Length: 412
Ligand SMILES: *Cc1c(COP(=O)(O)O)cnc(C)c1O
Image (cartoon, rainbow, N blue to C red; front, side, top):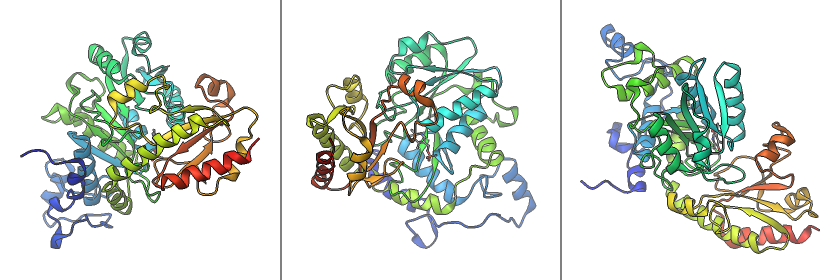
């Protein structure tokens, strides 16, 4: 049978689990414990022979339903969901690395992920920050103890696009694990498995959920990495199929031991949000492309950072990797303009952090999300003092243009 389309698969995902009374949504399971009449069954659950549940920190039917949905979306082998994107990313790295390892990490990373990577340094894992827009440059940093490369498809706020094709070839040649955070370009926009990612990770809180009402994160194993030669897999997780070793370890150590487990309520909200992911992204990306062109023409805007613009340094690459160019952009206002005055004049657009929401959001980068890293590192990352990051929503384009226009009119 021909594989069904992206949205068809998602909207029929839960009901195909043969839910009670023909329900189309996985129920929100509230039980922390799961009882067995036969103690052998309980023992089998503990020893992995029975895939059922023991305790809700490790797994619930609600988590399984969301994992199933996400795994199909990524066309993966297996997925694990977490309470947040940061829980997913930190659990993945903490469970797959050990002291003395070296890793390559994108220089242009989500701020909290960057901060987490600094923490790994303190645990004896050496981190090299590399320019992932240029795989030649990345190659120069590979060492004998390099285990993996971690990067994002489109970075935030400057929208650098990773050289995914070059990085995949590099990881292949050096047998490095390639972990790609696809938060900015979910599976509808980008086929991470086909492009060579071994693990796909990121935040469900953003586009996949989309409605600003639930936190979540995930990691998908695409089944394309040979774990049999990876040195950091615990003997107890080396089951019959080496393809499942890492995801088992991430699940056991990351969820069971570290406890970043997602609630059933969040699983439900995220899976409902995911039903309209493609529709929302069609609208968001079209709005973003139109707005980028609008800002590009506006005399009070000095520079626009959006991969959909032909002037963007990785525009061609973005066009070949992604279905559309995403919903995130940044703008630098002209020097005379006061970014705070501009932001305070916005009426429809919200002054808020977060991205991938139905609502359009604006935030000044340097004094907020990039404040902690300091001026020197901001400069290194190409973040100017008056940069404003915008996450474009699903509002009607005319209303967004009218709001930005009136706010730009009010400044300098
Ligand atoms: C937001 C974000 C995360 C973290 O996700 P949370 O769900 O907020 O913990 C990770 N990576 C990227 C690229 C993000 O934008």
